[in-house]
Image (cartoon, rainbow, N blue to C red; front, side, top):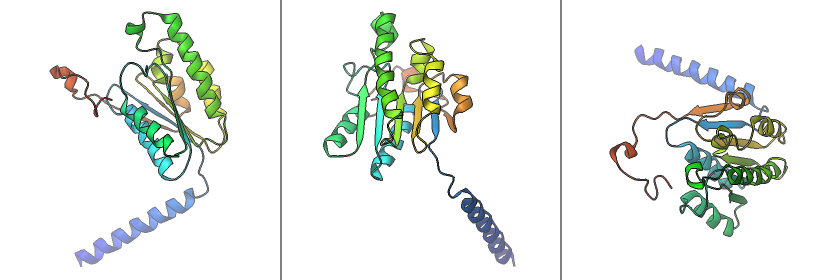
Length: 204
């Protein structure tokens, strides 16, 4: 008797899930997605969406703000360039000047961010691109290298099918308010607190 009731319960759940899924069919659209918070995994989450797109032969573009390609051999950048050489439809641009405490040059930082934004804007407006990742955009905004007023209208006017992802700590509330999906990575423990440095394959 208990097994019969459990089976009936599971059948009702399946019926409800199927009906809910059927109601959502046809409502697909390009999403604006935010990964933020003090915990690790923001860029990694965004890159996983890139890999999923490429697995389905969908085009993707990654524009990295703040990060400097000369600073360290970022694994995602190296891997995406290898995939690009293999014919996968992906572009990656690491256009940041570096961390502000390293550059010591706010004007240079703003120029680098402006260049990165122009590249990103071109991809967002390109109807041939399915996914655009704006890596560390939130940090560029926090340091006043670019404004929300510049960024948000472009994201909002993206082609209907285009997904846009922005990453970085301190996502501004204005972006959060307009996003379709927001995930916050919470810091609980980090190896740096134990004196362990950034390591190849983990941090980069």
